[in-house]
Amino acid sequence: MMDFHCHLDLYPDARSVYAKAQQQMDFVWLVTTSPRAYVATSKVLPQTKSITVSPGLHPEVADQKAAELELLLVQIADSPAVGEVGLDGSARYRHSFDLQKRIFTAIVERSASLGGRVLSIHSRAAAKEVLDTLEQFPGFGTAVLHWFTDSVMLLRRADNLGCWFSVGPAMLNTANGRKIAAAIPRDRIVAESDGPFAKTDGKTVMPWEASNISSAMAGIWGMQTSTASDILINNGRELLSKIQKLQR
Ligand SMILES: [Zn+2]
Image 1 (cartoon, protein in one colour):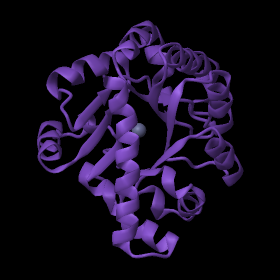
Image 2 (cartoon, helix red, strand yellow):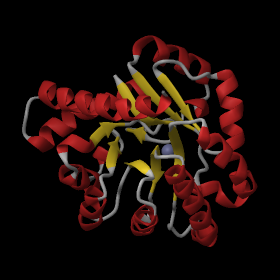
Image 3 (cartoon, helix red, strand yellow):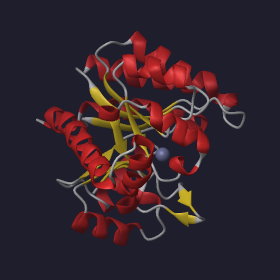
């Protein structure tokens, strides 16, 4: 079982979720939302062989955490994985969009100057601007667009840029999510929970439930669940190897 985007530190019972994930899962990518949260989380829920903890600066808190950008740029030097980062152009966060763009641009530029990073990217109502930024800095590494909800046309552009996509059970509960998932290249899709924010049937998605997308993807792809599961596991291994290569 693998989960490529999880706010594990934000579950109310984070320590027990961490312990169970550590015991039962092959891989969890624990994305943090601010550079200081990364420092604090790494102490309580340390990185292990199967749990990657990454520094980030969530676009929703760009205005509150902008002063921590310098710290993030330092942290990125020692971290092969970066996230959660990105842009949010929805009405609620539009007021900080220029600031978000400055922050995200600095992160992508830094990733490129360090020889590339694997980035977990939020792109709600801002996929075009996210892709514009990535295109400015060839060599930024590997982008993993998390819970991509934009158009199939922009998805094609992301595909041409070599982007990966992390998809969770909550995304596949919506018609638009399934439409997007169907258009993602089969060799570039991995499972995510986005817990504890993501919910299905009113229940918080747990890290070990990320792989539940196998059955919905099997329906979309028209194949057995076990075959879809194998595809997702192979993709997960390949993406994980990109992170591990940078660790050396
Ligand atoms: Zn997230």
